[in-house]
Image 1: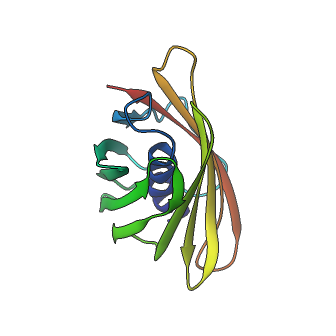
Image 2 (image 1 turned 180 degrees about the vertical axis):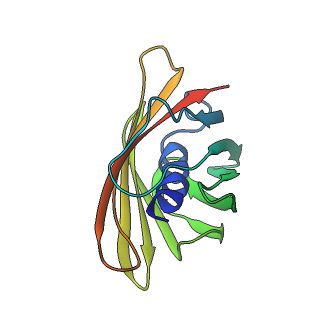
Amino acid sequence: MPYVKLAFALLGLASTLVAADPFAGTWKLNIAKSKFKTGTAPKEQTVTVAEAGSDLDVTGSGTAADGSALMSHFTLPAQGGEGKIIQGPFEAVSSKRMGPKEGEVRYSKGGKVVETEHCKISADGKTLTCNAKWTDAQGKPGAGVAVYEKQ
């Protein structure tokens, strides 16, 4: 299940960056280009990042490797800061903007950061690559790279 968390975490990273620029839009996970070092990759996933005033509204949906549904929804300040989890496996989310096409998102549970994602958008604006590190429910570390393509 670490990849389920990774997939939703990556949603957050994409949204933490900037509204009205490359991060806004619909992103689809390219399984063939993604590299999951542990666990099982989801069968499919789509992330939508939309502007909502000064916040970004992030919704993700997909199907896990076992066929179960994946769903996540949260908001983040477009310029970075503490966000709000509406639905998903985490209790808190925050972001830091590193540049116009780069940012970091941290997901917390039980007061501890359990996943960190660093995402960058390609020069042509068509690819979002997110490097993630996490700790699963059993305390095992994990890492992976998810590649999303703008739709």
